[in-house]
Length: 222
Image (tube, rainbow, N blue to C red):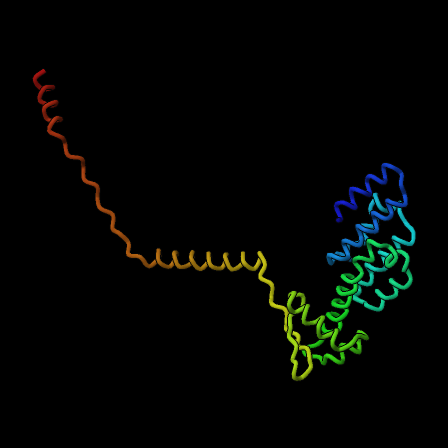
């Protein structure tokens, strides 16, 4: 959809259709927000191709992106209220409303859970101002989608947050490989220094061949 919106933007620019160009920019930003790219929306709106466009639609996606970046459900609801015409009455955006809201709730919950090792479900529900059942269902979805590391203690009605595993990146793998190579080289060096030396044998002069004697006799006759 981002590619289509980008192509559409270029077409509308060439045609001079300002209103449709703004719509294309809005949809490009919406796609980024839906794919966890809210942080790049300000940069997208600062390019040479997009700075010419402004208005309520652009302000709406800016505010929406800020809410996602801050992981604030309150800011999200405010944006929906203020820019109702641009974010609710637009049929394209409206079709994505549920997906946007679900993702925003997940971000809000993850922000609240972040400082804790274990927290009560009722506490999280109070903070996000949603029912405990919806909060529990959302966290369960996040666990299944592997966007959150933890588990729900049904008996204690708490959420247990697990520490993030240490990432094993290419640099760590390279360090392990270098360490292994160093150990191998050290072992080879130790083996070479401990190996018994082989005494060199004195080279004996080459023996003359039978043919050589015949050649010498023929020379003497001459």
